[in-house]
Image (cartoon, rainbow, N blue to C red; front, side, top):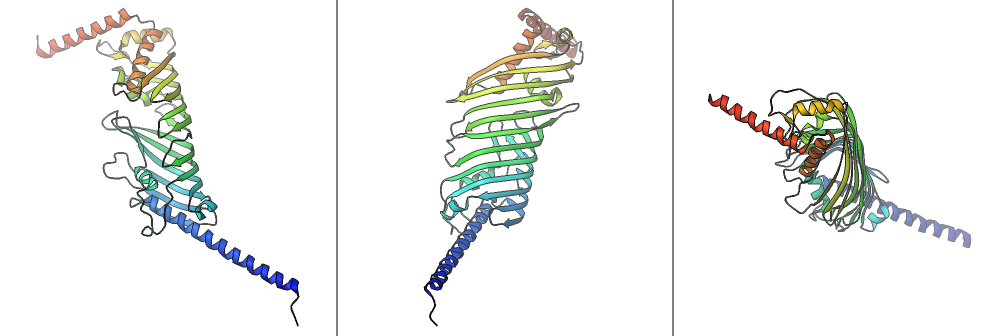
Length: 373
């Protein structure tokens, strides 16, 4: 019996649909395999994951570790309980590397500030992603030069900051209970604005404060507009920055710091107005004229603090050329805080000079005693 025309069309249509499904599944499997190969290549020889599971729309990594390269002084660059990578399948099929999202959960990330002030993190991963052109599988998968990541999220983890400019050894500050997002990374040029947001906590001996950072950065040119805030940070935790760099000798017994900085960088020129408030600052007394707090004799600082109930607010503006080797953001900030501290406490220039004279006299007397004269 002859098959009706309608049935022949139905069978033909079903065959075409089956072919399309097979092609689509094949393309999806190819894309999944490519993502997995790219992940393995990005981890490099010093990276590992306990499991790499490839799903229909994402790749899931469990217990991820990036080991430290030779000479890295800040512990393992990355540990994470899990990382989920969601690619744009259509772009992958077209051989374009486009990642919709990367979610990193339960992480510990080491951030290194070198002696020259440069910030480094996950160096091996960055080198692998930016690419030497070597791909997994002996180079069988040609890599598109452009790579786009829409969003990277860091959830419930810790950033460990190791500052080589303070020490040795490197001064360590941990931002715990941290969450962060990085939106729009267009590699390798990195000339477009990348939005960054970070929140977390800093635990001190007596207080736990909060930290936040928001804004955008053009990584290639260093142009940026950001807002940094510290709230309720224990003064002792920031001692190397707020005190020692300004020549302080006096022991800090207690207090907290609030800080807000609105920073703009254009063509390597920094303009950053800010405010620092120190609450309930307590200094230990000292009869030694050599002991100072922000270049002010300790006894004078303690007496002045009593009239302010231990609370001080300082306003400052940082301006400078980041390409100028003589300009240091940290040293500039400390100089302005020291001058502002003296002004707010009502210590005159003559008073500071007199204090400096007493310091020199005290040093002279100490030397005389040492030499038995």
